[in-house]
Each structure stands twice: as C-alpha cells, then as structure tokens.
Image (cartoon, one colour):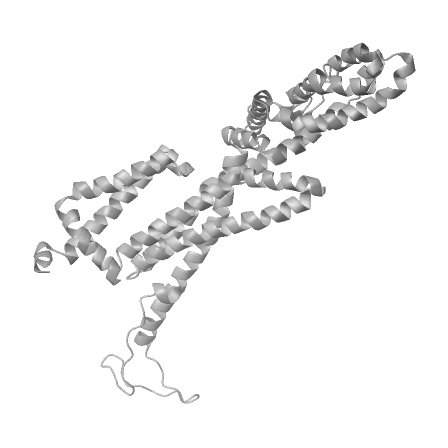
Length: 440
C-alpha cells in the first residue's frame, strides 16, 4: 500500500559524485560510512513518512468503517419502528419460526391450566380422571395445529401490530416521552395474548372436538361443550413477553444514546479519513481513489464474514435446545438482513470507485475507452450526462439499497456523478483535442 501511494524517492546520484549544494562528503570516523547530506536525507525521508501516513489513514479508515456499519445497522434495526416491524413480520412468516413460536404459544395456553379445568368442569364425576389425559392429548394436537394458525393472515396482522405497539412504546420511553412506571406495572411487554387466544379459539372450534370424541364417544355432547370453551377465557398475563423493566431504563437509554451517536459520527469520521488519505497522496491520488474503492469492498466483505461466523457462534451459544437451532439461525438471518444489505451496498459502491479510477488510469484499455468517449464528451456533453443519469434513474427505480430510496443520498449521488463526468470531460479534452482525434 505504501509503495503504491508514495511519491517515490529521487533518483540517487552516481557513486562518488559531489553535488554543488551538498559540499564535500565526509566519512564517519567511527563506522567508516559516508555521511548523508541533510538535504538529501530530508528528500528521502519526506516521501517515506508520507507513504506511512497515507497507509495508516487507509487502515484506520477501514477499521472505523467496519464499526460504523455495525453502528448504523444497530440504529436502523433496533431504534426504527418501521424496520423493527418489517423484520418481525418476516420472522413470523418463516416456517421454522412459526414452529418455535407455536410451541411457545401452546405451552403458554396449557400452562395456564384453563383447558384441563374447563374439560374437567363439564365431565361427569365418573370421568373426572380422564381430564388430564384429554388435556395432554389436546396439547399434542395443538402443537401440530399451531404453525398453521400462526401462518394465517389474522395472526400475522396481530403479530405485526403487537410488535409495532411494543416498539413504539419502548422508543417513547427511551426518548423521554413517557413514564415507564405508568406502562403496565413498570414494564414494557410484547403482548401475544391475542395470538394465544386465537390459537385457543381455533383449537376449540376444530381439533378439540374430534380429539375428545375419539376418547369419549359416549359423551359427545358434553365434550363438545367443553371443547367450545377451551381457551376462551385466558388469564390476562398469558402470552406477555417482558422487553424491559423499570430497573433497566437508565442502561437502555445510555445504550440507545451511544448507538445513535456512533451511527452519526463514525461514518463521517471514516469518510474524512479516506478523504485525508487521498489528499496526502500527492501525485498518486487516482491510485488512492482506487484503493478507497477496494477498502469499501473490504469493509463489505469483513461485515459479511462477521455476520456468517458471528451468527453461528451466537445461535449455538444461546440456543441450548438443538431442535430450536434451525429457528434460531432463521431469526439471525432475517434479523441481520439489513446488515447484509448495507454490506452489499458497500461492495457495489467500492466497485464503482474502482472502475472510475480505472477509467481515468494509464492502462491501454482505459486510454482506449477515453479516446472512444472523447468525441461524445466534447461535442455532445448533454448525451453523456443523459446516459449517466439514465442509469442512475434505473437504479433509483430498482432501489436495491436503502440509500437509493432516500432523497439526501440521491442528491449526493447526483453531485458525485456530475463531478465525475466533468472531471472525465476535462481529462479527455486535454488528452484528445480535436486535431489529435482527426489526426488519428
């Protein structure tokens, strides 16, 4: 890196020669080596120090860029209600997650004791002993039915609204807009009671009746009445997941403030470091721009690698039940999909910078491309700008990344494209004037 970006040391003088400004060459009596004149030493050390400075700036900018990507992802994912709701909706739409959440909902339903109590309350005295086995059989059936219930449009809507409500409440409290003590006894919860109730209703209307009839054929009417009541009156706390307690408020507020600050400061700092590296690479700025593009690519690849390796380690460490690990990996994949999008965007932006630096380079293919573009850039600049902005418009319509769907970033892309095309026009005008083109 340092050899590529340095300006290079001046050519050495022939051995034994004396320059007019350097004075006579003296020998060091201790070592026998000739002393290097001060002027020559400074000329050699200056480019060397600059190479090290530029290389260090690129390394630091890349490391800061990796942390900046993680901070931006955490801010967008954890502190944006729309992104949180979209991600959570995708989670429940996943079959593996449906199975895991269904198991939780069934466990909540039957842990309340309501199904067994309702069945027992309507059975004759002689059949009270079979209430337990009936409840267990119904629970097994519920585990099979639950994923289909969770996949229904009604439950998907309930899940989405429950997550939106819980996240909005959490952000309001974190931002100081509400009192945690007034939110359900000092806690913020994700209320899945409606989903558990929906599961219970579905079981009461379909599976419970047939399951009970198979074991109590002689008391079909009584069993039907019990099954119709199963799960209809659940305790209010059934299916509530605690997200935050009042004792955790200060810690959560500090973490949220840190994430917001880092998501704003670190990307700016990384870009400033890249800009400084390009500025100090005098005489090699095109190569520095190309290296900036490769650094963007490197940041994207590092983030993708961290996502893959980190996901395996985190899921395997947190999910102790092997049966739930497939769902855990699906949760990680969906939960970090925004991080994946940011990394892929950096790969694309980096490759664009690399190609731009290559087009402005000294290789024969690059010179041939500029010679081919020179007439259009000189005589029909509107066509050149129109072609470039046409491509940008197609990318905006496609919207592959979040930046291509936000006005501020689109304006930035327009400015950068204008500067890039204008720089290319001036370069080709110097290299290939009209007389040169006609002569060739």
